[in-house]
Amino acid sequence: MEQTVRKLSWLYYGQMAIALIVLTAMYYASTKGLFEPLDRMSTMGQIVQYIVIFDALITIPMGLYLVKYFRPQTEEKYFKCAASRILLASNAMPLGIFAFYWMGCYQSMIWVAAIAAIAWYFSKPTVGKMEQEMTLNDDNQENY
Image (cartoon, rainbow, N blue to C red; front, side, top):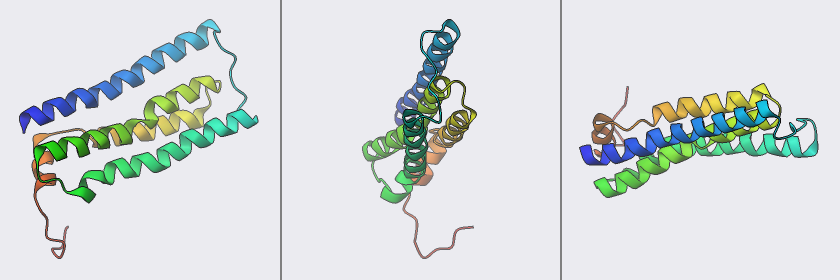
């Protein structure tokens, strides 16, 4: 179990590294004037907003619910589900950061990235979470 959690931790912190790389690159590009900011009210600006927001609306809940839905019984299946959870729950983070800078520091996009960062935090792999999610729960038992 510890080996599986260690592998998942690499993926978990790798997602944050990707977000930091996107943040650094876009900040550098915006301060050096390497691109023209996209008008948020233009057709392209609205399409970018829709993509980022709908991506977050679909992938964050799907990622956080994935392991509970499939209830994996082996470590291999758990690794696949938990890796998918990490990737799905946090993929809107670098996308939101990218859109934030591309649209000229449009604050709504940084909020989307912040929501994805919160989902990323809740997908942190631990041995206790792995043990809890791999045990079969009785559907008729009340959970408090």
